[in-house]
Image 1 (cartoon, rainbow, N blue to C red):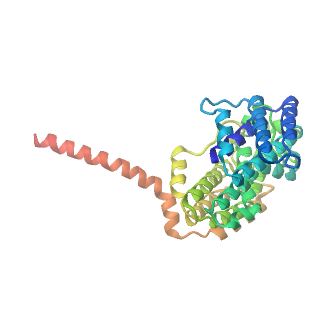
Image 2 (image 1 turned 90 degrees about the horizontal axis):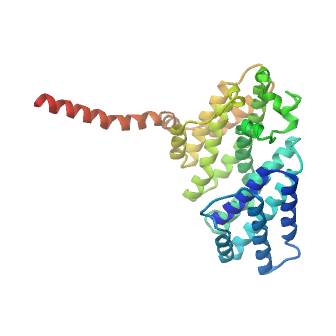
Image 3 (image 1 turned 120 degrees about the horizontal axis):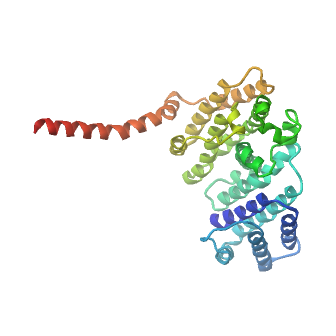
Length: 352
């Protein structure tokens, strides 16, 4: 079930990345063919499969392991409650993608709306599945605002992270309402002579993304199933670590900035319960707080949000120490057997 939903979603997003008026029209035609109001029963399923078919044909989505007929079969074998969730996600996300194929992200409201279509809606729908499967309490599905916030935080982080890649591809997802304070054109931020104002713009966007963290912690605190918790928590801690690496960092506009592989592994291993996640959030928000320039236009707002997050987290000392020093423990665990082997080898030689 999750594979079917993820594949359809990926297809839609690949379409959106392609851009172009012709593509927008094809998505709109497919979305128009799919209508909850006029179609019932199996025909609704058939139209949805046709919708997915257009998405596959229109996009650059290629994967030798993915066969549309298999997806169609799996979809038809799902219980109606699960079909309805995927149908709704497909319809709403497709409509949202078509909307933003024809318009740019101008206001912060547009930014939130775009991120809602791309990542918020999938979290709303997957939360519905968690509750429908009785793996989580009904409140997880009912509180759509929290589920949406989970997606907004991730997508805003992705958009901030992908500035250079999108710039080189001619795509613009940073909201004009923010970047127009610092440059005449968004592309101007990539120019070396505009490095200072580019970083200020970056910091303001990161500050905007951080406002979602309290809601996300509240969402995670409600989860009871360990696999679902891991599924939701790991992307969140990866995102906060990414924002900490990006904050006040001019390298974002010149090359690739990413968290280290070892750091990513540590985050994946640590983010297994709400207290550990709070400790991780506390650590990286503190890292951001320590880098806030007093001359930054959004510094006071960043400080305010950072302190509010830290107040919510307030991790115990033991959890923080594990999070901070785990890489050292791991390195020691790897090094110790090697040292013992060398010692035994040297002892054996001296004995001879």
